[in-house]
Amino acid sequence: MVRRIECTGCFKLGTNAEDYLAGWRKRYRDIVVKKPNDHGVTVNGAFIAMSSIVCDTCGQPIADGATAKATTEWNINREDEPLIWESQYSL
Image (tube, rainbow, N blue to C red; front, top):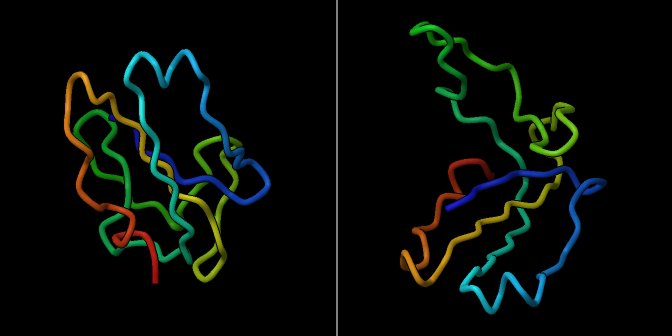
């Protein structure tokens, strides 16, 4: 499974026919960005809080209240459709 949040400038809708035939599916959601309180990364065992959501394509911050696209990709040959996660990052 793949999860991404992208700014509206980077988001591109599309499904490759070969990927679709191989079992890959995509779910797209419009979100109004809201950074969770516990949003961050772990580096060498230390948690580092992030000040905002960043676009998974360009790496630029996406401010709370801005619109963005959340994409989920999964392969039906290996897993069921993933649970809804997008609401964790949306108002």
